[in-house]
Length: 136
Image (cartoon, rainbow, N blue to C red; front, side, top):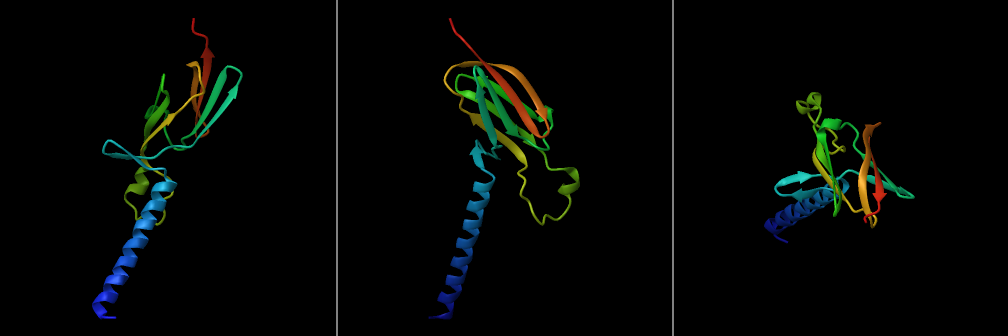
């Protein structure tokens, strides 16, 4: 084996490892590209009790003024932004597991027509209560 080919092999392995790490990071933050801006998707729980749906959207550290909710025939859209705390913007990052920046999540709803009944941000969760209504 020539020394040049060994050097190439080492760099190829290093690049493979970096690409694998980037893939894992994208999966763990549920990153996706919307237009040209990267986004993360918050976790959601959806419960149904009769004609009422309750959604819990995990948004710790997000101010209610940073959240937009839209209900349409395609489902429910929750989007906004979690800014990085000012104290962290100047420091060296040793670990970054909490996603910051823009977020967006489209949630498919069960069949039927729903209207927004209640919306509040409580204990780090956006709580949305929807009620099913009969058309006619």
